[in-house]
Length: 453
Image (cartoon, rainbow, N blue to C red; front, side, top):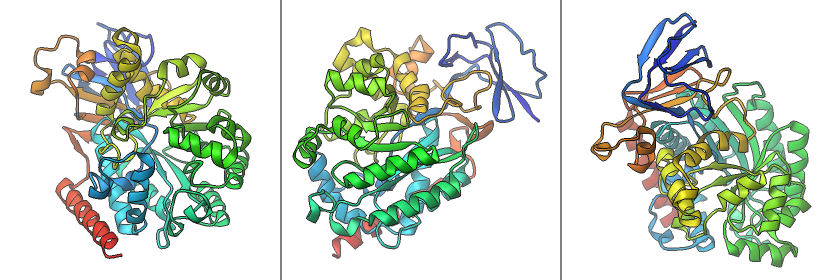
């Protein structure tokens, strides 16, 4: 078994207090030693990677995304709209998704994430029109081919606009279909062991697109099968108004009513909570995926990261959909999270360490993972290495701070479970020009299908 010493990094963020200035040692899929500054490993080394020109971090962990939306970036009919109107513009377009579109959109999003230093990607796919019943299977295939760690959330929509929901009827499924497929996917793909590469979670889209019965049944299945649950919650005030009108409850009260207020749940966005609700979320050990760029693009609001963390909520980070970001660049999202949270709390109350924590151990913990998100002995060997040789970094003095303050965009090397997946700024085994051409063709075909109806 090869034992690799990633030696003497220019700077390193481990997510722990242990000195690792001399680098880290990887054996198989795990980290086996942290080397203190000016020290040598005690482990027998078979190969050395000189990291003296690299800033090293744990692999970034993306806690919320919609891969299929890479096909509708900067879509004309959806520009300059807030969430509900934005969704209504795009639901009819997304209803035309087919298997080739789903496969290439997933592959492109995962490649984009890998290039940005991401080693664990979560996707929330909830739109499954006729002919796309095996969307999650296609996603699993793409992730396994690329060697990236993935948590696929089997999304769902069952409440059509004719029954008081937001999505049009042709974009929803029956609840029995959703339940049956959820169980199938768990049995087929969900890995439970430490170091799991593929996991399944259950993810009704939102309170305005599924029924109360489905929310309750999902909570029951998740408890029985020991899997995580995920949904959008408190992204906008429109959603709060919907819950009050439809259920007579604020969103967090509704979450508790349907059995979701527990440590198996992580939520996307989580912006519009009052202080009492934040306390309840923390007591229940719920996770939140902060999605700063999407929240700014749709003018949804600013997540209360500091209050949430203080209350005990596990705060992570997600790029969100590529039609509301409009990208899948997680290291860029870390910078955006730091700056948006400073706008709320002030420059001296949010540091680059906070932002890196949200993007690593915060996201991991939010999604129920304790084996990733830190560079520590026994953890999975997931890491990202960034060079500071672009013009944007010239004149910088603190390498770790410069990673965010000067705006890193791409990793030079990325390792997942002890295997190199990005080398010299390229994803290993991917023909990038061919992938982009396939993706562009799929995006054009999707738009043409929408316009023809």
